[in-house]
Image: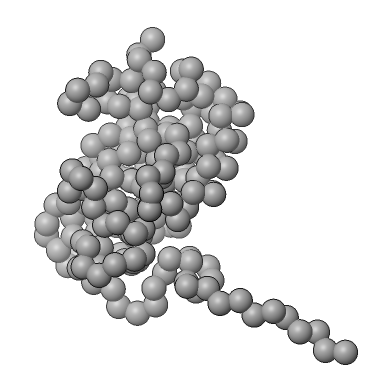
Length: 187
């Protein structure tokens, strides 16, 4: 009797499911083409992304090919610190400070797109990975620095981010232990 394994095909190779094998230029990250794209940044330089600034707990600025782009991290919602019409929220400063520590200026990062390249504010919509493998979006949620949030059609990491948020909430981690949840005013 033969042991037949059912072969499944994936839109993405195993491991980093979003990795698209081959050369991917910054044009893919900036919205040329469609679908999920991946850009590797082993060394800072032309065609690579580096952290320029952490704006707040879910927004950063990056440099690609000597141009600065604002990035909204997908799947996360950190408390506000610099919103133009909302006051600073509970745990917002901690979330921003921790993200600054995790992504210091000049850090080389890998970027992964979902379906939409930009939001209505013209910010890039991305998942961010440090070169040491840390999935920054998930780390923010696991550490209770942000809640998970999803806007169709950008939901590729919904399952793992939702699980991370549920664990952080249940364990009272970060904002879940200090505030009464996300989007709360300063105490």
